[in-house]
Image (tube, rainbow, N blue to C red; front, top):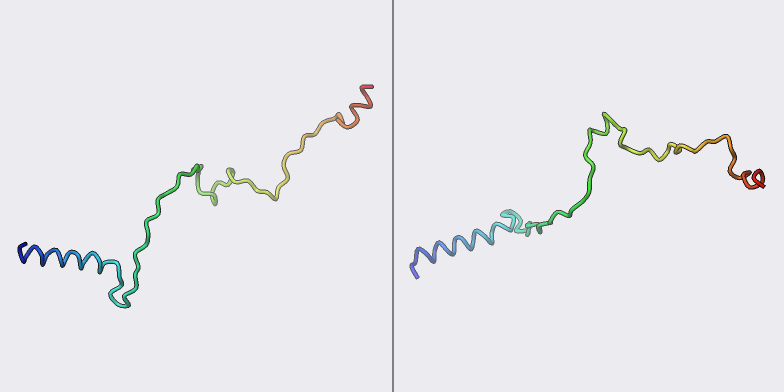
Length: 78
């Protein structure tokens, strides 16, 4: 093997391994890669401007109102 090729290979190998460590404290700081997970999202305007898409659990839902009381239906129908 050529001496220049082996010298280049050692520099490259040194650079690759030294890239993972902090030059000041020699801590290993390479983070593992995280693959994104598929998710279903709804895109909309900024919630601070238009908050119609957000549901507020503090507000009661619409209750069905009728003039007929369903609980009394059995008595009235016979």
